[in-house]
Amino acid sequence: MPAETEGFAQFVAARERALQRTAWLLTGDWGLAEDLVQTALARSWPRWERITRRDHPEAYVRRVMINTWLTWSRRRWRGEQASAAVQDSPAPGDMEADVAVRMAVRSALGSLTVRQRTVLVLRVFDDLPEAQVAELLNCSVGNVKSTASRALAKLRDDPQLAGLLDREAR
Image (cartoon, rainbow, N blue to C red; front, top):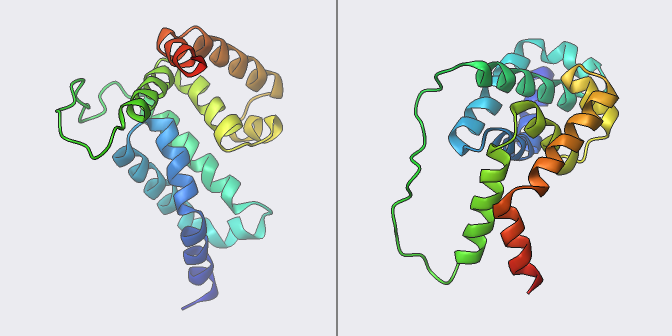
């Protein structure tokens, strides 16, 4: 196996799960997140030799992933739409609290604009510095700060999240 192919395979093996988690936080859908990561990796592969000569191949792949998601999110029709109603099914143990938290967070993230959600995912979940987020999104650091501030304010005002916080405080 050529070194270039082996290097790409090693990168995918090491970073695919982290990229998928980021993609899920951006999209809110595992299937779409997997498609997003696969598309980003497929677009990066032809340039892999040049990408690895740079300092941060993961930053390049993340940028491809973010640009792809921003392009996809601008489209009006996105194919299949998730159902608002979830069918009841028995679950082992009491997972009500965990499910309630996940649903509230997912709903709150869904209320943000694509840009706000992207900034929060990169800043909070991926723990990237503001400068790197600004570079990935091709904007200023001030823009990243103001977008994050507006997104966090919107999350603070979300009644479902406030209800969860009240419940946790008891």
